[in-house]
Image 1 (cartoon, rainbow, N blue to C red):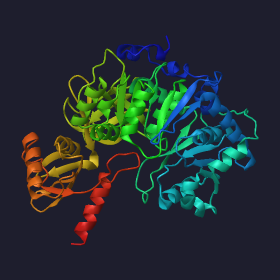
Image 2: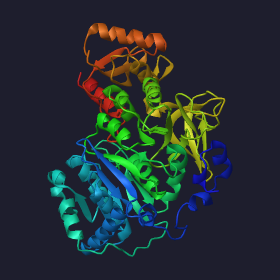
Image 3: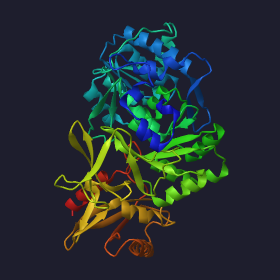
Image 4: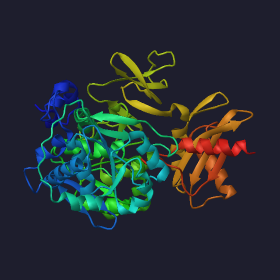
Length: 518
C-alpha cells in the first residue's frame, strides 16, 4: 500500500517508512531532480492543471504541467546562453506566474540553485540577500526594476518579459541530471531587512522529506484541489504550497499581488477548493472582512501555520467551513515536526493544540536541565535528530493524551513579579474582544515588578481612556489578576514579518529605543 492510499492516523504510524516516501517519486537516493519530480513526470496530459494563480482583479492564470515543463526547459537553455553554470544561484523576484515557475524550475533543470525573493522587499532587503547568495542573474519585473537596477555590478538583472520573449526560440526539451544531494534551492527565512536571516540550503532530495509534511500536515492526497495563499518566497508557500503538492501530482493554487480575503473566499467557491493551507493571519482576515458567509464551499481539509491561531478565529473558521483548521508546527530549518492530520477520521484535533509528531519524527518537551518535562509542565520543545536533541527555541507542553501545546517563543515569555506570562495567551484573550481587530503583547521594564505586560492594539475605537480600562478588565476577568496589560498602546497596524507573522521583536526594539531617549 502506498502512503497516499490512506488518510488514517493509525495506519500512518503503522505503515510509515523512509522507503515508503521514496516510493512516491521516480528518483532514488543517488539520482533525483526536483524539476522532474514536480513538473515533467506529470506533463504527458496537456490539460492537467498544475497551478491556479488567483489575482484580486480576477485575471487568473491557469497553468498546466505541460506549459510549465516546456517553458522551464526553454528557460534552462536561455540560462545556459547567459553563462549560468551548474551551482550558480538564480534569484527570482516575481509574483506567481508562468514566468516565475518557468524561472524556478528552469534554474533547477540547468543545475543552478533557485533563490525565490519576496517581491515586497525594498532595496536594503534585496541587497542583503543578493550580497549573501551572489546570484549570477536576478530575474524580476518592470515594477521592481527601480529596486534592483543598482545591482548590475554584482548580478545581472533580467526582466521577466524580456526573458519570456527570448526563450520562445529555444527547445521545449532539456536534458538534465542531478544527484539527489545536489543543491536545488536557497530559502531565506522571514526577518527584518536589516538583520539577514541565514539562507537554508535545500537539496533535490528535500522533496522526499517535505512529502511527510504534505501527507500528514496539509493532508494532501490524489484528487485534492489544493490552495495555499502564502507567497512562494517563503517556506510555507514554496515547499508546502508549491513543491510538495506538485511533487505528488496534485494541482495547487496561490495568490499573486496584494492579498484580498474577499477574493480568496470567492476563489475557494469558484474553483471548488477542497484543501486549504494558510497562515493564521489569512483566516482572521477572512473572518474580519465579512465575506466568507456569502459563499458556499467544498472544503474538506484545513490547515494553518506561522503562529498559533486565536480561539475566536478557530471557532469561526470551523463554523464557516465545516471542519477544524489543523495546526502545522515546524521551522524552515528542521521542517514540519508536529501536525493535526487533516483528513484522518481517527484523529481528533484538540483546540489550541499543535497536534502530535509526524511519522518518523521524535519530539519532546525538556526542562532547562535536559530532562523530560512532566505532562502539562512547560519547557522547551526539542527534536531528536542523529542522536542529539535540537532546541526549537519555542516553549510548550504535552498533555496526558500526548498532544503538544505552544507556550510562545522563549523570548516572548514575560516574567512579572515572579509570574511567568505567555504573550500568546494574553493576545488570545485580547482578540476575543469584539472591538479589537489585531493585538500583540510584549514585556516592558517596570521598577516594581521587573516587567509588565504591554499590549499594542488595532481598533477603530483607538485612544479612548475608558476603552483602555475596558480592555484591562476584559483580560483580567478571563485570565488572572497579574496577566492583564498594564499598558495599552493604540496603533494603526502591527509590524509583521514578510511571512505574515506579528514581529514582536520589532515592538521590543522600538520600546527599548523609546525608553533610551527618555
